[in-house]
Length: 264
Ligand code: IPE
Ligand code: IPE
Ligand code: MG
Image 1 (tube, rainbow, N blue to C red):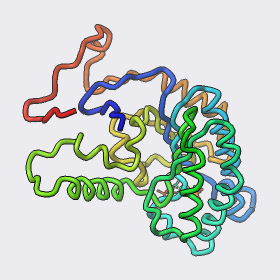
Image 2 (tube, protein in one colour):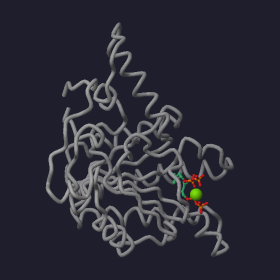
Image 3 (cartoon, rainbow, N blue to C red):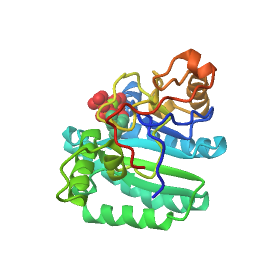
Image 4 (cartoon, rainbow, N blue to C red):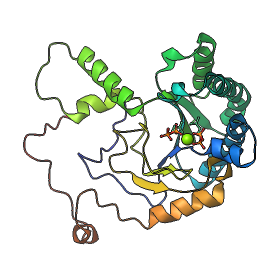
């Protein structure tokens, strides 16, 4: 498996167009409420924005787009809304996969999928398989995903893979077991809908991502709004712990602190 730079162990590249954009798609309910529509109407419109974003990322050469669709805490919503969201997920998979495949998009779904109906699990698997050879854009949908769940499942698998080993774990032992082991850490995180929190999204992977919050509700987020986020991103100085002066001088970072194991 390819090993990606870790923002805490290496100084990763900081490309001017982010390789990986991760988005919390928030504000569907408020968009609908403003129009006196049921919340689910907002989710339908939100799906349209997903289509727009996939196209926009393909056009801009972004390689990884990760979308938070359903958190491990969203089961707490009213039963009706949860089942409508599941139906929408099934329908979207059935209707969109052909088009994704045609456009060279690889689909991946991360999260605790065991809680989904067997039909939905099978559909996810078939969709991932159908698009597995594509490499223009990796579209990851986080569904029943929680950052804490991810760290715990990775820890469990790390321990199972190394029975008997008791000492000196390093992050390079854990990272390959995280759900998004196939992607570099997000360069840019966007949350629409005005809230400024992570809501248990990619806790590990966002360590050095640039954070961008916008009031725009997800159903109204469009490629111009994405470009504003990309402009803001380009103006950031990604120091990864160094000083501006070091950055300007192109200084190579000193090695890791003594005691950190290097095994990769
Ligand atoms: C985000 O929109 C979609 C999901 C969480 C599934 P919300 O449904 O959270 O919309 P608001 O935050 O209530 O406006
Ligand atoms: C976060 O949105 C989860 C998704 C967008 C899927 P929420 O609307 O559920 O987040 P909170 O509850 O406002 O933090
Ligand atoms: Mg919300």
